[in-house]
Image 1 (cartoon, rainbow, N blue to C red):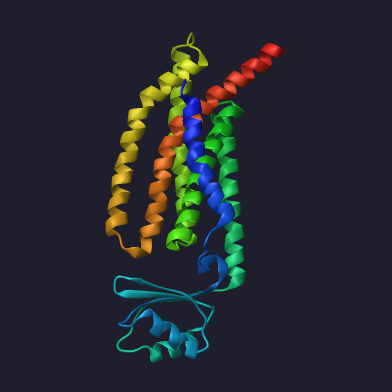
Image 2 (cartoon, rainbow, N blue to C red):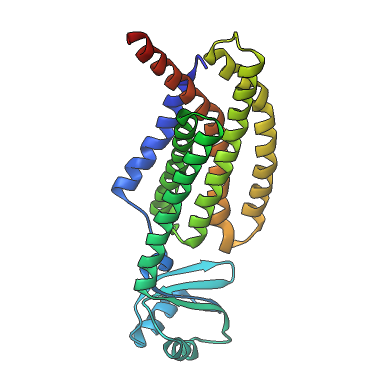
Length: 283
């Protein structure tokens, strides 16, 4: 724990560029949040042709992306009849893989529910951990570690959105909530070990206890995370385009969660305890 300020500095070095990216570029929301129509087709054509055909039907196309042998078209909100008319204009054989439309009202409602879900999850986790360990400092430090992971993930996808056009959709929200649960699970393991060692070695200082607890749980945490990381790497490389960014979000979050549970949540406890001791001494 004597290197805790180095750990905090490393976290800031990762988070600050992400915060800057969010401030400058924000995010690129998918139609799940903005509203619109999404179509995925397998067709032999080029982007210029697809855009021109859509324009002839008075359909505004936001983006056209090619993945392997399929095209992904993101358009203004259109109905099934308009889409069927557009398909008839496509050259050659057309295989429709999916077509979906989300209204702007539903998109705003989904965004509101997403923010509410994340805030509610963080609040309940804080209350549970504070109750479970009989101290508010455990709950607050665990939530700060979760916030660390969330900011790392959000910052990464803000940069990816600017560089590669990666969009934020409902799968990304699922990844965020999944990472929050993974992060707090790993943190609880460390905290539980701290509590056990305080009972086993009452003569040790709080900082020494935390240091010993982190040492004994570090290998277990890394081994557990590596099995998940290897699986996610395989999915990222072989799983296809539809889940690629979702898997990457899980991968970034897993790495960040493994780091934060050991090198953010635990050192924060030491800092909290030192500040509390100084305040008690002044009284």
